[in-house]
Length: 609
Image 1: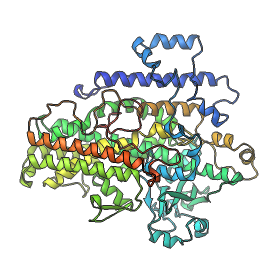
Image 2: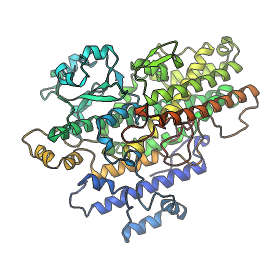
Image 3: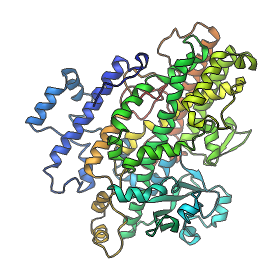
Image 4: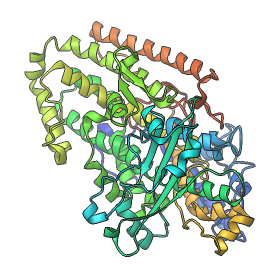
């Protein structure tokens, strides 16, 4: 890991942050080396033989054998770091912490109910959308890709809709889709031909049950036509099963969906939509706004450590041949895919209300809290998110209205206008001519822009980042690679699935080497540093002497404390089945505060890890 990365001096990690980051990074690297060393002696190279093999990563601890490897570690890790690696905080010696998803129940992650719940309360709850037409249609260019519309039929799903027809279910807002077809299909042929991955483009249809939970009713796995892209997709549809080999096939179908969702989460929901798109805001704010400017004071806490962590990411994570390419399915196409999806990025749509409306997960309703009515009432990310969004918006409105008494003050603020011009024309220069940019000619424009910026940097990033280890630290739940296609009847692979379904499952998803590397990485990414500053907090108490601004910030902090109490109360209410689920993991990813470490909660002010 090279640390010689240029970042402006005032954007570098503080001392505590740097020591925490390095210590956890080294710890995870050691955790990766130890099992890999032991694995050399295992009978099946680079494979887990059973789910019990996977559980050994978290149970009992692993000790390094004495010898050259241990000597090299002792020689290369400073004493202070070595103390950190053998912490006495209950994690054990060289052992991965047990992810929350398997703490209470080792197998509940495999249930259909949990599979659906994680689309609403897991680590990537920002993709699912309401199904508004059947069968689902593709937006890919038919001249290039042929017919890419879904092959799912009414007969495939009619027995899983509680007696409704598909038209009735759509009309009652009870059909939803996790769609990873159009984004992936242009890459499937290349990925399958040039990497070790065996990938499908996927569509998953889900039905909203009376108890508020989602039931997957069909999964479509699609490949490009062998004779060429223009011949369309070759698709197979799988439906739920609970017995025999059909159940094993269904479990594998869900795993292919999880692989796609894991990669899309890491590259798009996480890297692109928080880390990458925020960086131009950091740069323009530092270049164009005086440190005394009220908008600088408002936004600056939400940019803490972002440039530094992004520089590290470019050096060791998302670089060519880096950890990300080794551990997620797009491999060498990862950054290309992220860049292509950026073409569809729209700044105003990053606002939570706009996002929920765009995905059809909510409708405007003046009588509902926050002016939106959720079509899945028990949607933990959206329920908690709208409360956080509203609190941020109220704080920003009070603050901006104090410094800008009318729209003319916004128009005539030359620093503000220079900031907005650089951000739009240079920072997001590829998008400079888009019609959707706020004009920054009114207080309304300013408030909306600052609210969205703070939301993305704080709550959105927290929602898609700090659930990584709790849910994906156990890789069978969120595999990142698929190494074999779905076994076909009459093949040895299918026979293995009949006789030893768990081994067949593990031989299809992420291999041992990539599993260890992947969970080492997300353990780092899911931790809070000991000097973290959370939403509603400031690193320095004397950030302003303006009484009205201080009072507004105090109101903001009190509102966040109220939201924390509401989250605890809802998590304890059995009425809300998606807030805890079969795995018994309470939804706390938008709980504003946290202690340091691996907690699965807390909203840092900024994209700081």
